[in-house]
Length: 156
Image (tube, rainbow, N blue to C red):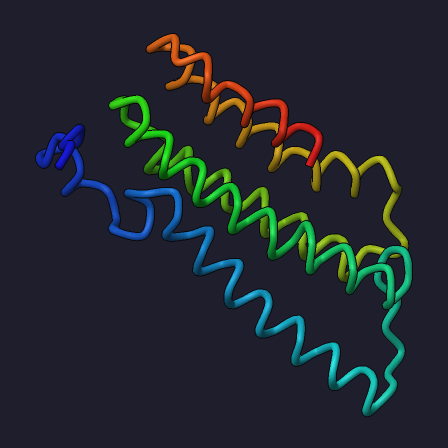
């Protein structure tokens, strides 16, 4: 098994932020359960809720880009370490990336009165920073065949 981690450094990082799949899979899973519960509640007990784009648009967007992007990015940022042998994003930078993802979810759900540019910038910042985190190890070892995933994150 490939061991690219320095145990002394790894032990100083909270376990949730040691590998990219941990906060993103957990966040994506919890978000999807909460969002589906809220969606069911909304249709059974209509409430005054105005997410950006309306409830139907919000639901479609969040299942694809809320849940889907968290899972895809979590996998890619974890797998790139095995592909390249270079330590990937972890610790505080990974925490910031996870917060970018979460902030995008919250602002779209609660931000019908917020400016569109703010919602778009917040939502896209997650994919931009994920693409940068993916590109670093791939470019460092010149593993060009895996570089295809970087633009895929940009167009997601």
